[in-house]
Image (cartoon, rainbow, N blue to C red):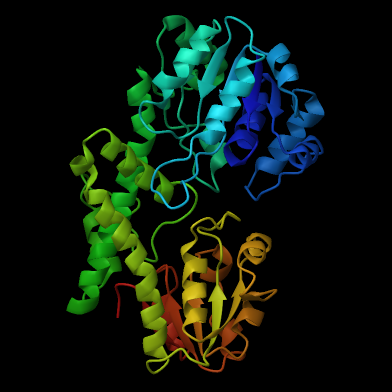
Length: 432
């Protein structure tokens, strides 16, 4: 089939390359000319494992290319995926839908009658029904097909998803999308066909549930710290209950990134607009628990440094919001680094992939080319993003360069007994 993908950010670039990998002819479009040039050269403008190889392979095959022309998009295909961002509005909780609206408006000026527009962006409930009016007015149809990508696993999640959800108004539109995803559905991937509103809610409900589970165990970490319990052992015991399970039950610095924080806030905002804000009032506390973990991380660093961070040297391991990503949006690691700096500390940061993005957005922080350089002469080391490089690093690598052997493990990912056996004072969230 001939498909187009509107927006070539994280979601769009991954989706375009994956659809070409399934055998479709794919044309991606973006308003950023430089990004389009880079993608046509096989250069992915962000870090995502496996995507550069997937992109290059399908460009070389001739099945994938990118453009800035909506006229070309309209003439190219009859299935158009909308993959643009929906960031949080400045000063508000609500989602900014201006990019979605602009993309659909530009597409409709060129789209052919009978075309299918497939929305993949994360939007508030009711958005699809609103967009469908203008789409149907030009003789096209809308399907809402939410994405469920995990950064660091986006290629796998696109080619081998755990489910496909499509909100439709006609069996014809559902049939066309089934044809697009035929190789995936042939592998017995569950397919849920539903209405627009349910399809929209699946994504934000899933993110809200995951955020709730993360914040629950972090709330338990707060209790563990005052009772002397160990949150990692508590989580291990809870995970053996099949009703609870162990996934997302890992206490630490909390969640960040470009999805969970802004999605739960947009969900709360939309609930307020619909008059059911009480139904989601618990998400306010979920958000608050998550943010408290960042403040607690700063407190632990201060406690290790005799109650003050003024004049203290701090080595920070991690800048990305999670490992296997260079995404620093709402990064807990950088939030903590900035807070420690504001408390008077001299901070040096190292991350295996996110250094460029961090330097561009957090110019006041100092950066180091390696973990050893970040920890040089440090009074305390903060482990804030659980990269394998940090998890697998032996304490002796840093022992001889630090001023004081003190570490705060913000991710509960290091071997506590190993670090202590090497003479380090080890602290972590929810453990003693």
